[in-house]
Amino acid sequence: MFVLGLQGSPRKKGNTSLLLSAFLDQAAKLGAETESLDVSQEKILPCIECGMCEREGFCSIQDNMQEVYFKLRRADIVVMGTPIFFYGPTAQLKALIDRSQAMWARRYVHKVHDPLSKWRQGHVLAVGATKGDNLFEGLILTAKYFFDAIGARYEGLSGYREIEGPGEIKAHPTALEDVKKKAEALLSPLMKRERILFICRENACRSQMASAFAQHMAGDAIEAVSAGSDPAERINPLMMEVMAEKGIDMAYRRPRSIEAVLGHFQPNMVVSMGCGDKCPYLPGVQTREWDLEDPAGRSLEFMRGIRDDIEERVKRLL
Image (cartoon, rainbow, N blue to C red; front, side, top):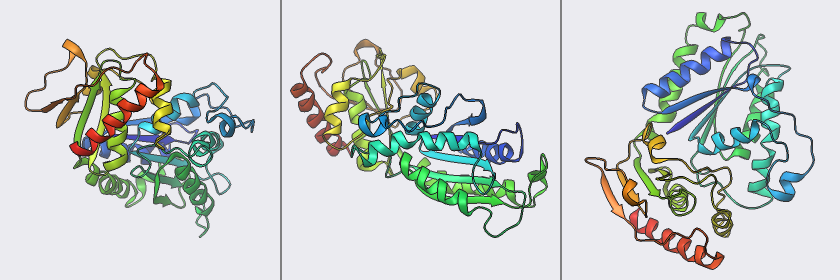
């Protein structure tokens, strides 16, 4: 399981960072892979309203946001941390939020859905200097729209008032323990999922489709991951096309090696569909062999046939 933290404060090791670290540290203790992304240190340019995302389904700006899209799609839980600036998030975080319009467009204009969008969760951590009743209202509204755009269910806000000076959050009587408890509440059900690793040679077609179908059908009960024995540079565009015909969005996915995945993912089952002599042997782990031809370099119609075969096999497996 992957938990992504978005650290939106420009202040290093400030109150927001302390809150986010408490959440992610607890998630790591529970067994999750975690990452804290310091948004202020990333090159993320503002949206230029060019309309490319609505026309083509992708953002025209080539900067660090391309890597952020990949991480957002990998994440089971996204945690957004920010101090309150004029009743909203920081400018640095707002640029990232605005650029998520590309993901919104894929969902609502191009009508394709990320396989994890039914199960992904989003939570907000925030601190503000004042004590007004409406302090977090603007942020909550922005966060709800952001999480909807990236395909995540809004799971509330942990917000703390009258916190301004560096490190003041540590003196709060419950804040750090609160966010640890929230992390445990969000992660505990997901940590009980069965874990299936789908593997093939390039991790560009077959295993990607199998993991996406499993995520789409049963992401609340199955943690499905894919990898390849000899990963390609990028996923197969024909595979993206035929999966889009099923309404499933494969954008922002990347091939990964078996070794890299096994560094943080311990499967209960491995389903192999052609990785040759490089298939891993994992003692005590169930294995299945699916005899599927490699569709790389084949026709669109052939890719459709492999897709439908994999869909039926995943249904039977689940």
